[in-house]
Length: 124
Image 1 (cartoon, rainbow, N blue to C red):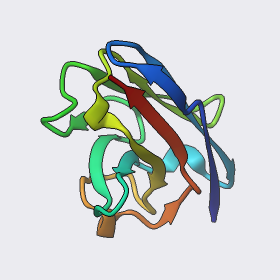
Image 2: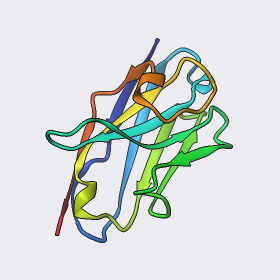
Image 3: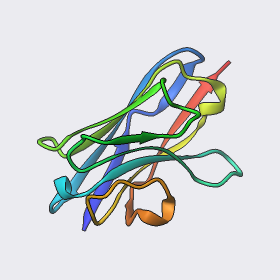
């Protein structure tokens, strides 16, 4: 199994940037497609971005397309989410997730293991 730990969250003003990191430990990290999801208070967890095992394919939610970039460094066992032009509606807990397979996905049900989350707050 792979364990995931997110970091990089915090408080930022609208228009600002943050970079989230997700460090993986355990076996065969590079064989897993990875994703980022977010959950605002009182709302369901929703898809933000995902990346294939090689990093060659990425998907984004329409709400973040053009502002967020997902990437991974398999040598460092880390996946990143660069968030630019942040908006108050981006405020949420952000979760890193991984799949037991290399195929990319966009639903919570498709991911097998999760981090504990990191909080992002965007002030207006």
